[in-house]
Length: 128
Image (cartoon, rainbow, N blue to C red; front, side, top):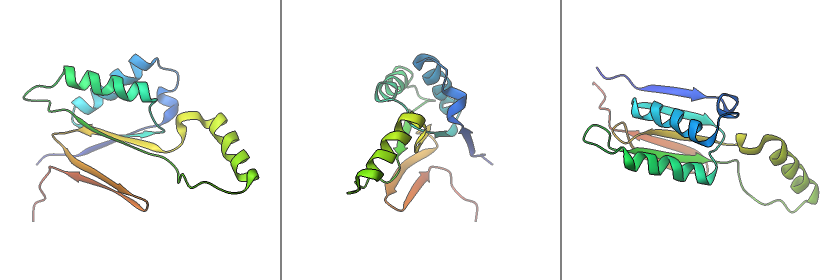
């Protein structure tokens, strides 16, 4: 029976790593067929680096990754105070808001998201 491993990475664990080290760590976990739940989001250039690294390592055994970042509800508030609060929180927390799912394409078939839920569809068949 194949085991599905979900590995939670708190943002503090990658916060002080360079972009290259951060990408290497996340890529290694995904290549080992773990699904990574990262607190926070990667920077746009880091997502590009992760995708580039993935493309360079595609093989018969490693088919690539699926990645999806989820942010807090992005509804704009009309109140100036709420906008100020959100700006302050963004300044303090940076990329800690939201989370990112990264996993190997051999395990994750598709990630669907809508305002109320995330569906992670896997290639693992259930025993009935």
